[in-house]
Amino acid sequence: MEKIRILYLDERLLVAYKPAGFDSQAEEGFDPDMVSALKKELKARGESNLYIGVVHRLDKPVEGLLLYARDKGMTADLCQMIQKRQIKKYYCALVRGICPPQWSRAEGTRLENLLATDRRSGNAYVADGVCDETFADAKKAALLVWNVSDTADLIYGNFLKKCEQLPGELLKCEAPAVHYHYREEDPMTENALREDFSFVRICLETGRYHQIRTQLSHAGHPILGDRRYGQADEWNQVLRYPALCAYEIGFHHPVTGEWMTFRI
Image (cartoon, rainbow, N blue to C red; front, side):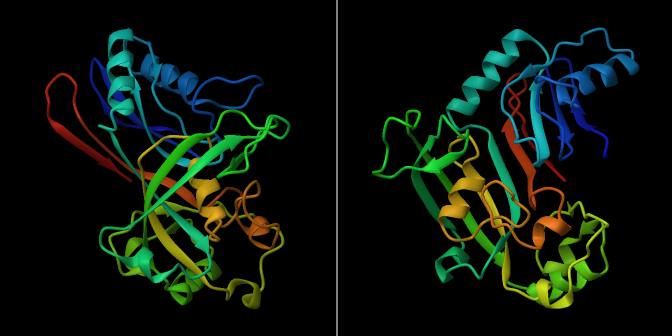
């Protein structure tokens, strides 16, 4: 399993990379979690302040960047910034199918739905007009999505090589290097890999439970390797985790006012 990485650290906050398979904070059980791992790393660095304030999360199977506070006051400040949408979070994903033309517009396409949670299964659902007593309270969810590339052949070639990373130059765009976690057993055949799929970027306007995975699936473009909201097919044999990454985060530092951007 990959290790966490601290990209930025000062007395008030830190930015860290969460590998797929890590919880964003301690949960029941013995699975690795970011808060425990960060405290261990800070202690190893000789830091006396081991406080880690959680202000946002990533789903356990999703990798990417997370922002944490290092004191209670900063936790409140960062939570308020998130509520005011002052922290920009960008994701990228491989999705099934060729996206509609409007997704290729420079300004992107806005997807807006009501999301609810099924109390029985714990899954999120698009509940536009279909809420009933089995759903938790529905909330508005919105995101912007851009279709970066339909270069399936290029991505296909990289999959055949079983590379650990998907470099941006292969997609002819400024895409980040995204890790895809392959299962070594049961490799897919060439025919199975030669289906249509697209590389997209997403900017969250709201931060709902399983929002990106649910909305993209509802739009007809589920994320490859997503066992919960995607399709049960050969991709689940190739990818250990959904092909989704929180690759960029940007914000004004609450103390200095400096705009800071971090990217993987």
